[in-house]
Amino acid sequence: MFDLLIKNATLTDGQTGVDIACKDGKIAAVEAGITAEAAEVIDAGGQLVSPPFVDPHFHMDATLSLGTPRMNVSGTLLEGIALWGELKPIQTVDDIVARALRYCELAVAKGIGAIRSHVDTCDDELKGVQALLQVRAQVKDYLDLQLVAFPQDGVLRDPTAMQNTIRALDMGVDVVGGIPHFERTMAEGAESVRLLCEIAAKRGLMVDMHCDESDDPQSRHIETLACETQRLGLNGRVAGSHLTSMHSMDNYYVSKLIPLMVEAGVHAIPNPLINIMLQGRHDSYPKRRGQTRVRELRDAGITVGFGSDCVMDPWYSLGKADMLDVAFMGLHVGQLSSRADMAWCFDAVTENSARIMGLQGYGVAKGCAANFVLLQATDPIEAIRLRAHRLAVVRKGRVIARSNPVIHEVNLGAGQKPLDEARVPFVSEGPDPVISGGIRDSRFE
Image 1 (cartoon, rainbow, N blue to C red):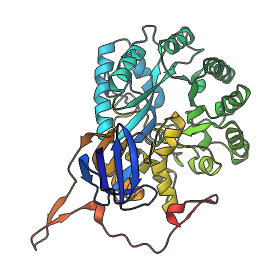
Image 2: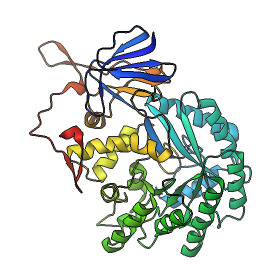
Image 3: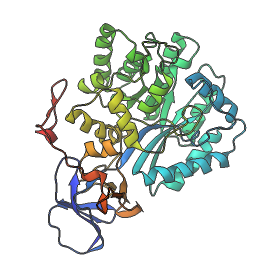
């Protein structure tokens, strides 16, 4: 007898009429026509079952703090950093825990199964580290929370940041972070990359650096990060987050830079909502939009995962823990409009981000962890278009969040009629199987 059986599901690879059987926290079978009994049976009705959404870049120590102690009037990155500096001394560990737990509830309800959160180590009390270590322990049964030791004010610029970062790692933080473009000089930025990567190599940890979150085309710390990754044998364990200066770099330099990243196996984490909100603030018109070169990075073979970065904090006043909002924005800003491109954007908030975080047992396949989401949509593109309603969220074979389908009642003079946005007929003039750059997607063949 199974613990949970999902009947008549559609999978993200296009398979339809699929049943998913769960037992002891694992997926026991994925096939059509499973007839065995189960403690709970859910008829998916042909709707989409996806692996959990994954957010590879977030700041949980700051989330839901909007307006404390004041608002970011200019809307800039630098005022956000200054405002965060005002908030840190007055918040308590309990404040951070309460906000973070509230956010985790929102995230789970939206189908997020894993989050990588940066936590500020430029605080001698390490309140954020203390808080998020508590939160990680409390949410482990329903959410994978990976923590990054992040010296927000610069590991060399702040006098105690290096020792605090090492303390945070000793306390159990998972990943080494940094912010080289916020050091005093380009040279110190490069030195910070070297030092932090050496710490990661010595401890056997992954690296995720805020890298070149700037409109300055001369901010080129991703080059140093790729070089140190190669030198220290960290290939496949390093991510560069934001990379916004790349949108301002000349094409010739980028033609050198991207192959260096490929050679080093460095991942890329753009944050579409925040990047386009914060960047280009010094421009009049034409105005740069800030998102890095997603298409070029992807087509070169670099693993690209979209992060949400912020929700209602000193840097961003909006957000609702919805990775489909993130994919929707990344799709538009990156002009990723072909059918295959749009389907890839769904991968950028699921499979790609899971790969960046090194998640084990991820996916909807036999033997994987029984973690998945039932969406009110019939394919990944429709899920992004609608920012689809989450009908059920499953963790370890147990439904941990559910909601009723969103059905509108319309009355246009001929009596009431139910309208499901996810059932709007779609007529295609033919498949679009090619992603620019020659990568084919079998879902559209």
